[in-house]
Image (cartoon, rainbow, N blue to C red; front, side):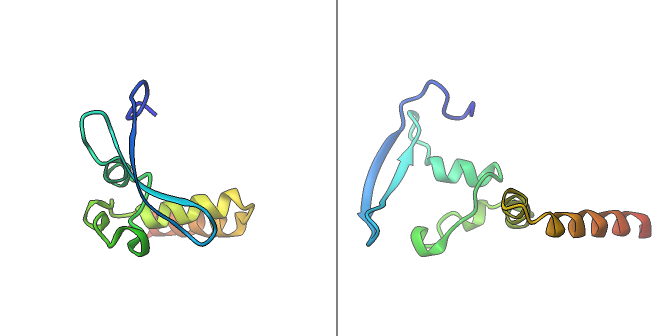
Length: 95
């Protein structure tokens, strides 16, 4: 990803969960919050349980739907994807 390519990313570890996973805030070399930048680009969504909701205002309008559809596609749930495409086609025809 061009946003991070060739840069040193600084991580500030904030927690370890019950499964041993590390929680951290990551920053680009120029000080920008990497999570905020990913949300702004529509590549991530705010997860209030972990962020306290600080990224929600940066979300693109359809990020949640697109990421949900991408997840369904990766899991092989093509029925979800096909229904979405059919709905898109039908809404285009009605316009």
